[in-house]
Every structure is written in C-alpha cells, then in structure tokens.
Amino acid sequence: MDIKDYHNNPALGSSTIREILKSSAHYAYKLTHKVKKTDSMILGDAIHAFILEPHRFNEMYELFEDVYMRAVGGHNVGDPKLDENGDPIVYLKDRNGEGLDIKGEQYKKFVAMTEAIRKSQLVKDVMSQSTHIEYSIFSKIMGFDVKCRPDTMNVDAGIIWDVKTVSNKSDSGKPSDNFIREFISMGYDVQAALYKRLCKEHFKKEFEFRFLCVDVAKDVVGIKEYKVSDELIELGERRLKWCLKQIKQYNDTQSVKVYDCESEELKADYRALEMLEQFRGEE
Image 1: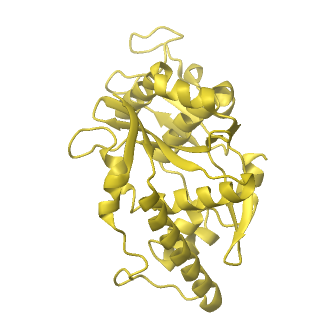
Image 2 (image 1 turned 90 degrees about the vertical axis):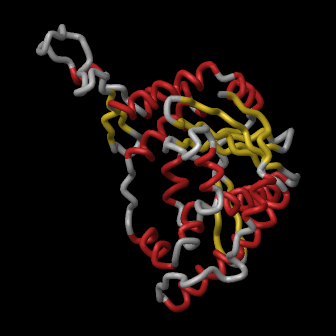
Image 3 (image 1 turned 90 degrees about the horizontal axis):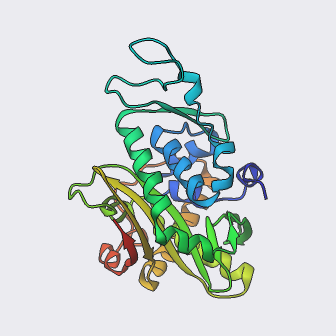
C-alpha cells in the first residue's frame, strides 16, 4: 500500500493514539489540524528513508545543491552555496513537498548520520534480514479501527524493527540517552504493544519488537538496537487500553481536558526502562 493511502485511511494509528497521552485536547487538535513538520521531523524522515529505501532516497528527497550555485564571494560557478560558517547548504524536499534548508550544525548532523549509516554493520544486518518493509496492517481493538505500518520486519524470525532518529543534545553527551529519556513520554511502549498485537493477529505468530535508534549527541553518532522487554510490552498494553478508553470518552462527550495528574492506569513504571535491553550498538 502506498504511504499516502495508508495515512489517508481513517483508522487510528500509533501517533494519533499516543497524542491522548498528553491530553484529549492534543488528540482533538491532531484530528482537525495538519501538523506542520518541524526541521527535526523532516531531517528524521530523510534519515528514515536513507536506511529503509536507499533506492528511493533521491526520488523522495531531492538534493538541490545545483539550485544554490553562485559566482560571488570568491566561489566559482558550480560551488554549492555556503552558510555564514562556510558549511554547504543542502535542500531536502519530502514526499509532501515540504522543504528544509540543511545547514550549519544540522548539516553536520545530517552528514554524520548518513556516513555512520553507510558504515554500519548493524544497519546492514537488519536490512539484509528484512522480509517486509513498510508493510500496512489494519484491524480492530475495543471497537476502534486501528492500523500500523512497521518500518521493517523479518516475518520468518518474528522480529519487528522501528527506526528512531534523535538529534538533540543529551546531558551526558552519550548517544541514545535522549531515546531512553523520551521512551515513556513519547509513548513508544504503546507503539510497540500495538504493533506486536496487530502483527501477531495478521501473521498468526509471535513477534518481538526492536527499536533501531540513530542518535547524534554532540558530534558522536550512535546506532543502537534495543529489544523491548515483556515488562515494557505489558506496560504498553495497559496504556494502549487506557488511551482507547479516553478516546471513546472524547468521542462520546466531545469535551477536551488536560489531566491534573496521572491516573493509576496511566502511571508508567519507569523502572521497567531498565528492561529496555541494548541488544547491539555502534558508536
């Protein structure tokens, strides 16, 4: 299924479901507004495509260095445009036509990420094992039409991989610390539980869920594979059901609210993050 057809399908996906973890107001806003992509989101999408569909990368993201040719400031015709620090500027244009000038620190991160991915044996291993890339699955949970689109899978081995890119600076300066810190707040446990459930139902077999995390902390790129533990899947299942109950309540009342405190169902056992096993890693 084409990705545009997948996104246009009204079934609830992981990102929409997880909005209600913030508040029903956030969920309601996402239903009625197109979320404007941030620079980080566009950059993350580029890295995502670079890993999963390298043969389509240049089709999906046009590198318009030739647009920025100039013959001023001592540069010859054919040289790329440079920013104020002397770094090249690259223009990325995604499938929806939204564009981003990559320059300065962001350009350095982009180059570091792509170079690390090219050299990564871990990425090569994952992609060589993949049998299904961006495969769409639809089902029902608690009366809701739901959907998922795993980044890549090995159905025979029963493994689901989801690619995450993180490029904020962590306090420790260690790659992947941002990912671990944001795991619960971003609802990645809910995503893992939803994907495992739908893949099990669709393929009639058990799956394990892994995150392939590409992270830049300062000038260091870390590529790590995390296996989501059974404890975290149980947490995600509990929070997934809580989310769907809240969505039903919103659909029935059309009233939005901000949570004053977390309910017992929503409380996350942060100790469970210790069970997010670092399966493999490269820095």
